[in-house]
Image 1: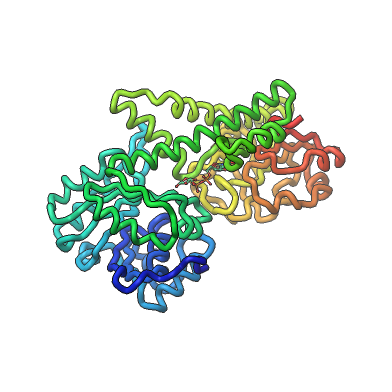
Image 2: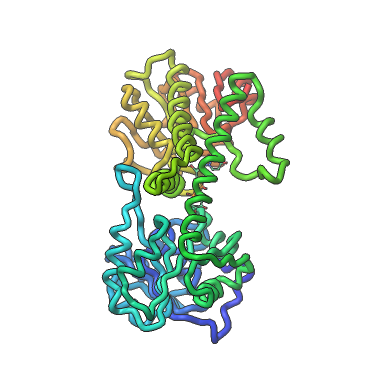
Length: 440
Ligand code: UDX
């Protein structure tokens, strides 16, 4: 999928770029930069991943990625190599798109990123720019400078705001480009890479850029916890959460996006970044109470969903069969990392429930899932003899299911809709006992 504004950068703007990391951020970044006309080398330590990519087989499922991968390889502008210090020697800019996982105590593990910086330090050419796209704790750009000890190399923070499943679209249609650099001219150079997108370029110092990323994700997490609390309040007072949230959405200061109640928010970024922000704030002597509470509300939301499920089967989950539709952290991805659905099935399993799951993008048992979870490849089969059907991910196809068939498969006509994805009126006409989120 070539973007509408994919004007290839003018000859003089073309750069030799190296992207370290071929994951959910690195790979889309590499293919998009190649599509903009740059010469890109993408590296990863996973040799089998590089082998697939070099053969043109996408290792991440993202709309439009395969086409750009094909174009990049056939044009010769995109190459894949197993991570090596050598790969950065000719680069004008090196993008760090490496994982920064969460440690047990909520802090951020920057060891992979820092190891890469150590590896490349002496090989960077004079005048090269190291660009951090990974989400890193505030002050990391400065730490990278200290590791590099190269006065002739600049370190710049250029955080990504990509949504999984929309990474290519978001790269070509960003709402803003944030570049944090000590030298504004270097920031301009990095920002120019994305100038064809037409997005506003915000130039800041590195620590401000790093903070923008955390604050944005933590704000989104807090918004979602607020939305879930609104739905819970609606349930308590007998209001209709759909109507209330719709009413709120017309205020442009609130906005219509990100207003859907859920069994909890998750995914690899929001959760990690919210925890990290609380943790980093604490290190600096500040208690970021709103984000800390947003995390607590999210935990409680998953408990509330378990309670709805438990109540639907008469109060005890041990030995009860529960059908679950949706395992991924949101629709449109195969990613189970920090998925509320996975966490809820784990909590149900701890209480002894037997879970029969279906998810359009999960075809077999995965290590993230509890032993009590059996993955089915057919949504109706997953309902067989279950006492309740629980919807945990908002896949579009669930809405158009044959609910007569669902009813004939279930042992009891109970539905707990953790996404308010189904139509309660239709289901109640079919004699289902329907429970949603703040829906009368
Ligand atoms: C997020 C940010 O959106 C992105 O800007 C950032 O760079 C990375 O983190 P992503 O992880 O792809 O992107 O997920 P997103 O689409 O934001 O959804 C996060 C969670 O919020 C999911 O669990 C989703 O189901 C939930 N969500 C989203 C809701 O519960 N309700 C909504 O209305 C929207």
